Length: 216
Image 1 (cartoon, rainbow, N blue to C red):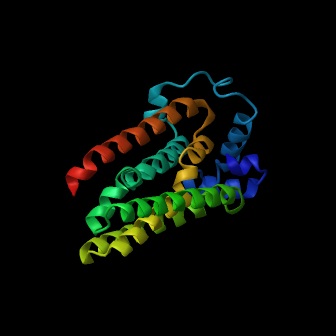
Image 2 (cartoon, rainbow, N blue to C red; image 1 turned 90 degrees about the vertical axis):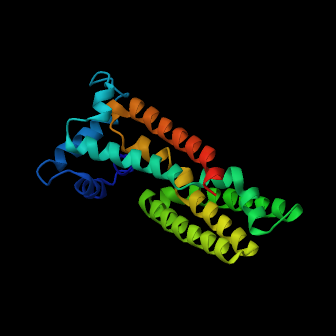
Image 3 (cartoon, rainbow, N blue to C red; image 1 turned 90 degrees about the horizontal axis):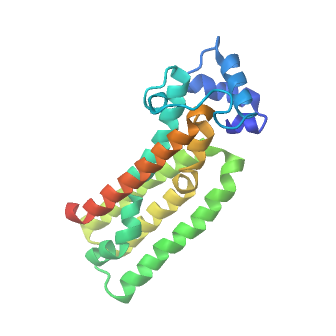
């Protein structure tokens, strides 16, 4: 949808082929998206039911909903909500106390703000997919660093790991968690699909926040 909106029809066709269209149907799928952008959600197709969201009837719609829900799911399954809430606790366990733990937490928050601004300024120029991939890879590396810091009981490495994790998340998943779903969800089901995506993120955030300390 974003590529069509930007007038990049060739790239839009390539994206549709990757997510489920066939060479025989890609032109029709592209035309459907173009028509959808000319109307308000649901104006020409009637209101979608929840079954249309949970069990869509065609492969292309399933692929679009799966892609949008996947971004929403992994944005919170990455565990960054626990970093936001419990970074002082993690740093104290790593050996920082009092003012040191507070300064470490401030450093994590500063990284979040800086890289959120960077990510927000780049996703229109570089595209959504590269930033999401970079964000995911960065999170994986950051958690390896954080885990290693706990193994060797290194406070400085713990701070580095948390800063890397928050920077990576803020570079891609943070600004794109709700941007990508709104662009890939078909117009007819967008409202209900977005409410389901939002529910998923909040549910995961709550579960991770409530269970994090008990898992330590």
